Picture 1: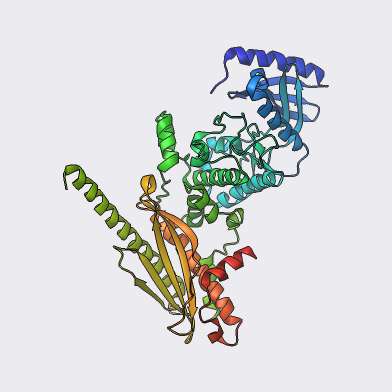
Picture 2 (picture 1 turned 45 degrees about the vertical axis):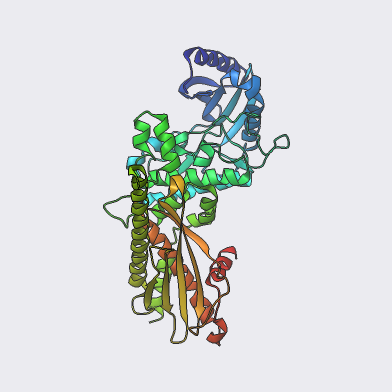
Amino acid sequence: MTMSTTVKADIDTRLSCYLKDRVSYSNATFVDAGGSAALYRVTSPQGPIAIKVYDPSFLTGTMAVAERRRLELQATLIGHSCPSLVNIFHVEEAHGTAFVEMEFIEWPQLKKNLANVPDSKVPRLINQLIEAVTYLEKQDIVHRDIKPENIHVSPDFDYLKLIDLGVARELALAEEEGVGATDHGAKRPFIATAQYSSPEYLFRLDAPSPTLWKGLSIYQVGAVLHDLIQKVPLFNSEVEAGNRWLVARAVLSTVPNFSDADPTRLATYKSLSLRCLTKELATRMALVDWADFALESGDDPLTALHVRLLKQGGNAGANAITADQTRLTFDRSTFCRQLSQNVRTALIAVCTNKIPVVLHSSDVYTTPHFIFDFDLSTTTKLSIKLNFAWQEGLHRRSCNISLSGVLKTTEEATVLTPQSFLVAVGTIGQAEELVASEVAAKIALSIGKAIDVLDATHDPSALNGTDVAKLVLNGHEG
């Protein structure tokens, strides 16, 4: 939605009146306009600042309450201490509209510079974005429109600023809101950018809640990470086609493709972005947390394990349906088998002959699962089961991949009900190497935890039947 020339002229007049009230403010230069406000560069006693002037119609009628609440939220950020978030100087209603004075950022939009971002700067930039998003979370605020257009980067790509808090809102429900309420009462208008919105937010599949908003932020940060890696916007071909339905369908069902001439380039970040862009909210929240972005140290589980080991020495219609189901079963089977082999290859490359790796497979045409056995010592074996739970309907070519396992000092060792934990979501034909890498990393983490408890005990037999999931999950919670 763009601003009409009539509204723009009205805003120009109101800004002129506002500047007369402000001491030594001058030289207002139009910068840009969206559907609800226009942005100007203005000279102030402190130097150049940006002033956002709202379309007066947004402060009247049914939209007024929500808009004023968002303005109040921006006012709470005056004088904030986050270096990667745009500074807010002043928020005021005057001359029949609202004005927000903020830092004027000379740096260009990330959207216009994606192709030029060096791979070496991706970790630094995404961590600064996380800094801004988590700072807002601590203030009980969700941005809701995180995208390259709302991020400015320094010319050397060392720094970024997240801007435009115009659609920000509280994480928690306001007192006057019920579970089914939104910013505009019983109506559920869409506020944000479809291209960078999660499926549950775009299609209004879940009621407003802190979980919904955090899930949206994780998704949007993952989308920005995708763009930093791929140097092109998410769902770019659908957007360029100019068809909103194609964009909506892509958000709902298309898994981003990270195909690359060099599959090792930013591989850990590709995997992280893919997890952030998981379609289903609950699964996304189980797979990703902000702590997962702390990757600059290089201590991913595979690397950590490698270093540690080095240190240690009918009718046509019915027939078509049947054929489709048969093909789907075959594709699922092939996916499970190939992914397990790729995981095995990744682990063998790290474990070498230090920890022998043996892969056992079930009947992949029934309920597929694969078991990895690792000989940690002459008396102790780690047995990890890889489980595939296929989704149905629209996402029938995607599956939730989980791990469960047990430490054994005798062949009879069992756990009554080994706890499983979700590690990835895989989709047939989509980023399969990245998913295998993520699964291998989680297994490597499990191996590391098992070695920890083995090193810490004088009696390995006491570990017989230890549930691996509890070792891994307790380690993360601590």
